[in-house]
Each structure stands twice: as C-alpha cells, then as structure tokens.
Length: 157
Length: 166
Image (cartoon, rainbow over all chains, first blue to last red; front, side):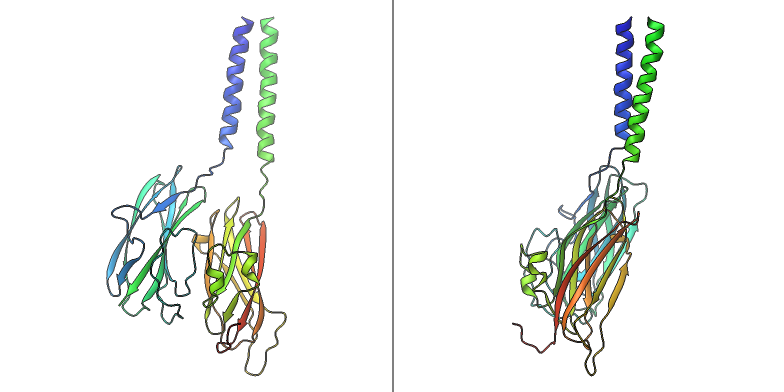
C-alpha cells in the first residue's frame, strides 16, 4: 500500500514539475520566410521593368504562429550587404540615388497560422531610378522573433 | 501508517512544487539588448563592404562624402521586444566654417520591422552637403520594452566630394 502511494506521489510530482517548467519554456524558434520555391517571387537577380505590376510571393512558417509580415524595397546603389544573400548577382556601378524606389509595407497575419503564403501586388513606378535594389521580406511570430530574407533585384527601364 | 504518510507527502510535495514555480517566475531577469555587426559606411567606402570585414575592424576606416548617403547597419538581439532604436551622429572636433552648418543628426526609429526580438537595423542617411569635414561619432541606442538600453558607438570620416581618397 505504501508503495502504491509513493508511486502515485512520484507520478504527481513528475507531472507538476514538468507542467511547471513547460509553462515557463521560451519560444526560441524564429519564423522562416523564403522565395526559394517554384512560385516564389522575386527570385534572386530578377529584373523588374518600370511601369509593370508584379505579384510578390513568399512562404512563411513558424512553430507557434505567424503574426505579421513586411515587404520592403530599397536601393542598393551603394552595394551594402544583408545577413541572408545566397547568390551574387551582376551589379551596376556604384552610384548616388536621385529618385530611388523606397517602399515598406507591413501587414498583420490573421489567426496566427503556422504556415502561410504571402502575396502582394506591387507596381514599379515608371519614374524611379533603374538599378540594383534589395527586396526585403520579413515575418514576425507571436513571440516577437523575426525571420528575414533579402533578394537582390534589378529595376530596368 | 497510511493516514500519516499521505498528507505529509503531499504537503511536502506541494511546498516543493509551489516554491520551485514561484522561484522561477521571480528569476526572470531581462538583460539589455545586444548589438553586433555595427556597420557604418559611405557609398564609396568599398573596404567596409568586403566579406568578413565588420565591427571594430573597419569602424576607424569608414569614409563617407558630403551630399551622398551613408548606411548604418547593426544586428540586434533582445530578450523582450525592442521599443525604439535611436541613431545619433555628431562631431566634437569639427568647427563650422563660412557657409557651413554643424550637423547634429538625431532620429528615433519605431518602425514595426524594428519592434521585434531580433531586428536588423539598416538605414540610409543622407549627408548634408554643407557640413564641416571631419570625424563624426555615430551612436546607436536600442531600448527594449522593459526600458533596458544598450548603445554602440563608431565613427566615420566625412570628406568633401572632390577630395581624393587616401
């Protein structure tokens, strides 16, 4: 009988301790975002024509839930680098911007799914500087971790 | 025997479990955000963009030119969400000459893309054409939602556009 009580007690102890540590466990997993799939857009080194409209597509995923995403385009006339650039594209000469395209759109993701394909229609204005640009996708999970991917693109006349 | 053991055991168990739980909650210390790969560079500062050159290694060599843009970048890691990132650029050494204006740049960034645990700071700053040449201090300050803050400092030599690079 004592053995039985001890057994139940140990089981309860294990459950309680486990339950306790589980609630204080941290989410250490960052969300991911990528354009590396057939429909992903833009692919590295893509050339986008001024005056045209493109549908940008990226896939995001997270262990807990996706909360928001953003898409930014900024010029890379100074040839800076980001933390995620798998391929080197042929670059134009370094130059100073006159009327570069700069945009930053942030959206909330409803119902915090763990996987989502993000699509966004973007028109390239016909009066922006042609040249090298970075297209920066980012996604933020419910904890606050951000995943990013940056794609080198070129805007052409 | 059974009647004594059971309540005693569960009492001890409850005390132990409750104590370990509340201890953990009290111990949640949030350390200040960490700034790494702090990078300052002008458009013509090619050395700063070579792979593997980062942080302290090139801060002293960073060069930018008046009337052009310079970029400031950093990787940030915080334990609670970042609430603001402040960029300050000023010089203690230079004196504004005729036709020149002192440059005292101070901007607070609270863009949604920065209000996360691990933002990548990247801004292009337009350098005014009418400022004195010389060494400028660049300070990046990150504050999190609990009010913890961390600063990183660097410097950049801002030169005339015509001046040949050494």
